[in-house]
Amino acid sequence: MRFLHTADLHLGKRLNDIYLLEDQKHILSQIASIARTERVDAVLISGDVYQKASPDSGAMEAFNGFVTELVSMGKKVFVISGNHDSDRRISYFSSLLRPSGVYVSEKFEGRLQRITLEDEFGKVDVYLFPFTKPLHMRKYFPEDGLATYQQMTEKILSASGVDYTRRCVLLAHQYII
Image (tube, rainbow, N blue to C red; front, side, top):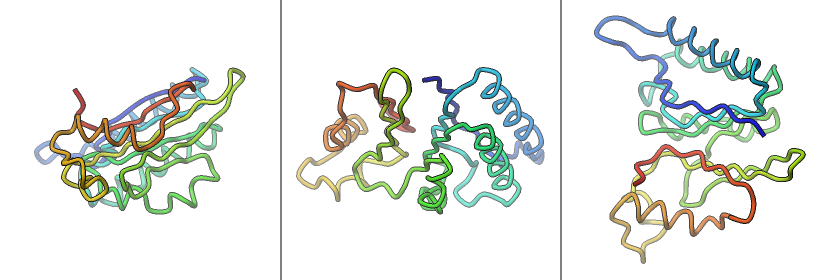
């Protein structure tokens, strides 16, 4: 199975008074071209899709066009939220997108979302681990006193029942040592 990984698109970013969206659209076009040329099965987008939690419509339209192009090529698309994104806005319509092969991290409640793909070599589990903080995970694991990102990550991996006997891909946007 062939994957193309990207992250930190920061669509809608401005540097001083320069709006970078046209340059970003060009970069998205190049990524789509690489996905086609390299015949990847899926594109993995590891968070920070947008520059801010409330992206402007131009940034949202650019991302929509990019994902639509990938799906029209028959590519699976996996998206998680990063620390610059609103996890609730990123996950909006996730259940409606799934049948088209677009898998978006849903509201995160301490367990990794697993999507299983299959190729000629068998199954591949893709786990979605959107950005979160130990403080936010304490309500799901109150007995563990999660203080660090490392502790949080270990606990989430353990609680999610990851089957390490199978091929696994962890799509994450985290502080991990």
